Figure 1: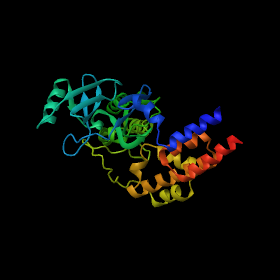
Figure 2: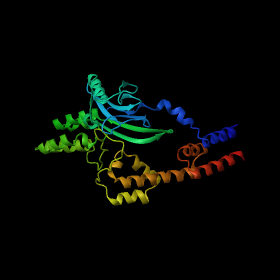
Figure 3: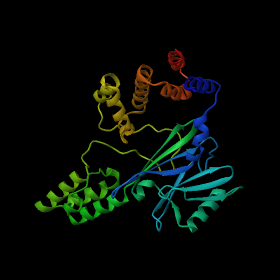
Amino acid sequence: MIKKVLLISFLLILNGCTLDSMLSIGEIDKVQLVKRNASVSHYRAYFERTQLKPIVRHKKYLFFYNKKKKDLAILLYKYHTYTLYSLYHPHQKIQISASGSGRYSKVRRILRKKGYRLTSPKRVAAIVDVARRRFKGHKTLRVEVKNYQALQKKAIRAIRSYDATILASNKIALPKSLISHLYNQYKIKATTPKERSAIESISINLHLNRPKVEPIVNLEENLTEEVPDKVMQSELTFNHYMKVASLDELSTFMKEENTQNLLSYTQYKQLKHRLSTLQNEKLLREGSLEALISAFKVNHDPRFKERILTLVKEVQK
């Protein structure tokens, strides 16, 4: 029975059937809470992008913020309908039908009446990463949001009062762009040994000395990938991850939220390609039949097809 199920599943895959794609519909265009603690909240959403239309000046998504609700939201436009998805309150959205000239201006006025104003995520202590991703057969925009408001408020209190004890138990790094301006101001103002010691302790507690730079997200970011600035990362580091690093080491490096901004565009693409190659090689060597079938549905690599058929024959024996 198991043999028949495996064979039928594989034949369906070869004929273009995508069961995962059908089952994943309920996960598209919805925001999910990934993790939350007293300092940071992490959210993720996958939005269908095949029918997205530009909202203004070729921008296919914009961010809005409701100060009263403390809610960051993303505006998308398709099928003659604007939809504002809350990024902090999963399952909440506002839909506005609009057509004709000046429709975005009308939508913006409607949203303003509801308390939502155009913003940049960093203005409201959020770090957002938007990327094109395939999600279970769907072409999507993956939106990763980390809300640092709670930690930023504690940091502001600590810096303004030169009181490092407020952050004594903090173990989470606060992105520099969310606090560096205020921190530098009070660092310059620190004149007594006590104040200088406090400001140094605050820097340590916020992990501001880490040689990382968080992703830069524009106010009205386009879908085209931008070449990140070159920052504090030598060619030697790139060569290590390109030629020496193991799969696990490279995978960890690529998952860090600031990696893309630490590399040139070409370097990042090359490392992504090497990671994909190493992952595929490991999967071909060690992957189960189910894992190989799942991968083949995405990459259509003939090596995977050959390996799957080999394993199927082994199962039949």
